[in-house]
Image 1 (cartoon, helix red, strand yellow):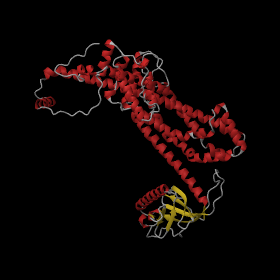
Image 2 (cartoon, helix red, strand yellow):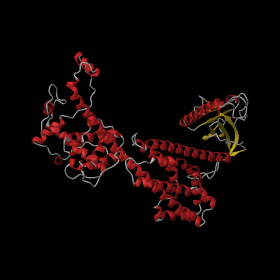
Image 3 (tube, rainbow, N blue to C red):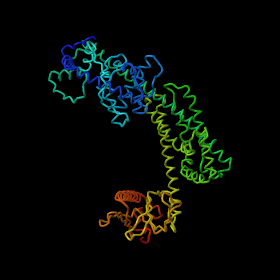
Image 4 (cartoon, helix red, strand yellow):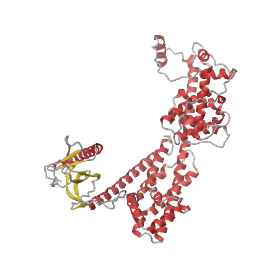
Length: 583
């Protein structure tokens, strides 16, 4: 082992002469125990057993990359396996080290260099780095926890001679991050620094070679760092692009299974009417054809993929066409309800079970296939966002890819809103069918929030329906006796008693009855008692939030939406509050 060159006029960073002599044999044994436990942790994490030298097994980087991905999915974008080509193995180590800093936040003083492992350099730094990774993994809830146990005596071999000296030399270099107080600089040092920064009194002819050498070293370092990052980004782009393409093929294939193995047999055997088929399977044909069109556009790009290939223009061009999903997503809950209804017929239930058992369906129920279009559009948005993250700003596809991602996010938001609108309309229909003698409640801007059945201070039952602008209340007419463990077969009938506009309503509490909430409007009052303190807080907060939003909206409405010429705040004075009887 060659000795480290002395720096003239300086001290060693680690005071090695003193530190090496302070490393005892006990310290060496403790390191060897740590090495054993780190090895054991990796073996348990990957469910493997290393044979022979520990560092030789880690040297190609394959096990380390799999370890990183087991802790955090896709921490390493690409793993070079089944190869002995040196630059590919070095790529594994570089990807692993990049994941340590970018994904796991391992501090620099805990990191090892590629040469420390690949060239059998400083194995102490390798162990220290992996130990730090185990601590980060445990903090993230990784199931395999690093455990400190005493290894069997046969597992510890104390090095001798030069090997022992070398190990102590590396152990002496271990350092922890410390908060270093900056010493006050002397006047001579400060003047020299100011002179260098200003360029005055500097003999550039004398310093020119030093400046050029430093610039060369710095530019080389930055270029190597950029190259490492660019390689990692390229690997991620390749992985994400192929994932988009492969998952689209699998997605369309599953839609084909749903059509050919479920929909067609059910209609051909006349087990479903045309109306039932339309409700359950909706526009699945259209969505399947749209997916196939996307595959045809992606195929030539993926098959001829390179680091400068574009993908954003495809999604940018077809983003608006994703609105074909609107009807399907709005109808999805109705489809599931209709499916449960037709399953009650013995022949339909038996046929569905037979279809599920067929090899083509892979034991998956029809609901497994029906939910796929609902989940697909948000998946596009996530994949494209990940692709943007790993595309450098001067890439020819960057701007288009960003625009396409924003469009896909807008489409996903639009579809989610349409789904909520469909669910809201369905809920209105349910409520209106349960209310007796109620006026029309449905308005385009009115959204359902919450409902519940409670008791009043008079020990009577009251049903509460909370919307974004009104609260409807009524008295349950009857309750069907339901066997234990069974579910009600229909909605509870409620006799409509009245409604209160939230913009003119306040929520009060009664100290004598801790679980009671009282709603006061201009000329009306409703009191009800909840079942628990938790439920009281939930309703109290929900009501106050809804009232605040209703008041803000009422102030903003000018002229009033109800047709008068004065502002929305006119409601209380103009008699817009429904005059209804108390419960």
